[in-house]
Length: 255
Image (cartoon, rainbow, N blue to C red):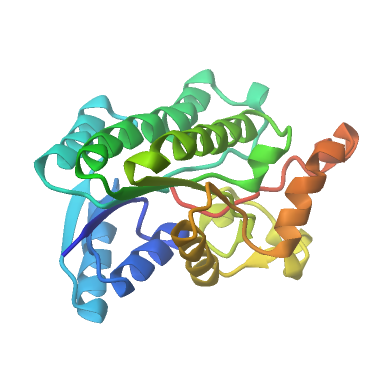
């Protein structure tokens, strides 16, 4: 049976991917810092879907832990990688300790780059495989370091998709908008100020993203409203962007 590796799989988008890939017949390798919740998630996925789940407890911002996860790609075939782990910061760049900003950079950029590199090398040798890097519609806006990180993820993934298509390897950036998860609660954000029509269901969004991957899309933006938002983003005045800069635009948990 094919195997998929997912970072940040305990809740939200990561958990939705775990359920979707299990339904598609994949066994799973689950990666997160929280070993207790990780084991509970693995047990539930096995019970519900009848699949095998391997647990890798790791803080991906720790070089030693990251190396252990990278090694997993060399010890057995991983057909699908979902880079989903992440976290947001409510305060602006200048109000955060630089060490906190650096940790976010490591998880959202450096970890994505390293795990993608570890994944695609054996995929190229086999002539098959897929990488889904969870980005954000925030990457289409000028909203500080988080947006900058997500802009990099989207551009990086789209470029790889072009280069690896001929080698049988698919790469896609998933750019969600607001998703019902723990992400915003963990940031202490007031979700009531956001119109209800802007919120997405994680399971529905992931199902649509999986279809986009099967269609060969390099960038997946869920729903027409978010496609319209990203298309219009280049014309949005900076003053308006500043007014909404405290509103988070995706929903994931830290891995």
